[in-house]
Amino acid sequence: MSAIVAIVGRPNVGKSTLFNRLIKRREAIVDAVSGVTRDRHYGKSDWNGREFSVIDTGGYVKGSDDVFEAEIDKQVELAIDEADVIIFMVDVETGVTGMDEDVAKLLRKVKKPVLLAVNKVDNNKRAEDAVEFYSLGLGDYFTIASTNGSGTGDLLDALVEVLPEKEPNRDDELPRFAVVGRPNAGKSSFINALIGEDRYIVTDVAGTTRDSIDTKYNRFGFEFNLVDTAGIRRKSKVREDLEFYSVMRSVRAIEHSDVCIIILDATRGFDGQVQNIFWLAQRNNKGIVILVNKWDLVEDKETNTIKHYTQKIKEAMEPFTDVPIVFMSVLAKQRIFKAIETAVQVYENRSRKIQTRKFNDVMLPLIENYPPPAYKGKFVKIKFCTQLPTPYPQFAFFCNLPQYVRDPYKRFLENKLRENFDFTGVPISVFMRKK
Ligand code: GDP
Ligand code: GDP
Image 1: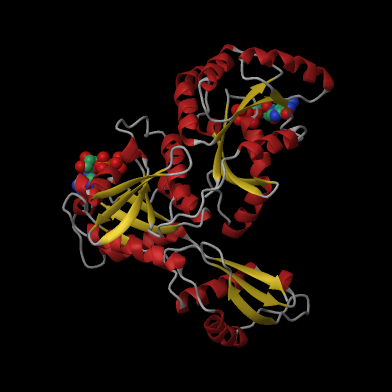
Image 2: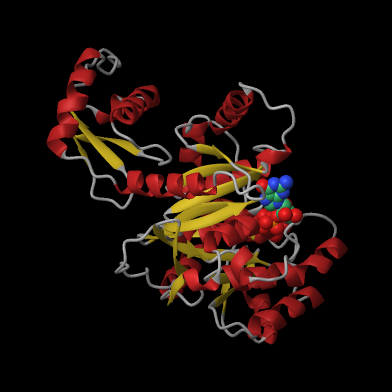
């Protein structure tokens, strides 16, 4: 799990520019693999070896200033709720505005670290002008220029200083489930079905990070932790109709979980917003189960309805399609048990460790039958492979010329891995290493 950093501020101060700078290198790699343009407001970044997630809050609410003004309180409040660290960005070109003061007022009350970034400081004169931002009452600030990156190193040094410590290893080895999806998909109903009555709650395990709350449950013969989600903690549904809010709420739950239970409404399908949540879970290397809820509402079901529906979802999931899909109805109490059973199975798949000996015995003959194609006249020889000791499955293949192994061959290796060992519902990574 990595810490969450939110960039807040009024429109046009340069939030997206900074965001893109922070995630650029990594995003480029991901996009080359998936070939799909994804949500551009959430990404991973790192500095001095510390990884963190970045959210560009402004990216979700574009539009005129007055539209934004109506939203800004909620947006900042949400960032305060969901993020570990907040970067509050202002613009030296315009100086302090009323809206900046409103945001500062909210942020002054916050216990979480707030870093004030004065942007567009492209020259020395502007560095002097930045002094006026002391009036926001947030103390020292960082002068940066997002367009060319000047000053961002100091900002990031300060940022990693205040990132919360990583959570220590948990003493229980129970699956942590996050239930995520669009508003109205049936998340609360499902959670209620899972939780049942209060007496099923065993303990409240307050997480070490301020507001991560796992609650331990014992239901249907399974023990698991339910990761705090919007549905449990918050009674009111605050503007979850906006994609920003539901994604932002999902980010935290996803990052804290082992397995994401993604619920979708059968009558709406695996649409763009669900795809973004799926992608978030995948990027975070979480186990994934798709629950197609409200199956009772789908009329004229016949033999092939489930098959066709599954096919459509899998097309949208490309290239990671080895994901279980359960058709259920919380209302009709159908297949809820199956849903949780599947989630537990995915958790086990994600924890699977394959013995190196067995792994080589299976993979090396397959590789011999279908070796990596020669590249620039050079032959790649894979000699040995092993699973890495990471919390989720990652595999290294050792060879003479790792740089010559292309993505299609890595996909071949991944497919063979999946055929021979059960990693259903689990994103896996394949690396080529020099031997
Ligand atoms: P957002 O609405 O806060 O996400 O702002 P954007 O990132 O879209 O930036 C708004 C405008 O400010 C764009 O035209 C950027 O090119 C410009 N901008 C961003 N950072 C800088 C900077 O460091 N210096 C200058 N001069 N312009 C910048
Ligand atoms: P959430 O916003 O994702 O937490 O969704 P809710 O659990 O509040 O459910 C939204 C609506 O869908 C409520 O009116 C539920 O009664 C209804 N609902 C939930 N599950 C089902 C189901 O399996 N079938 C049908 N027909 N309705 C459902």
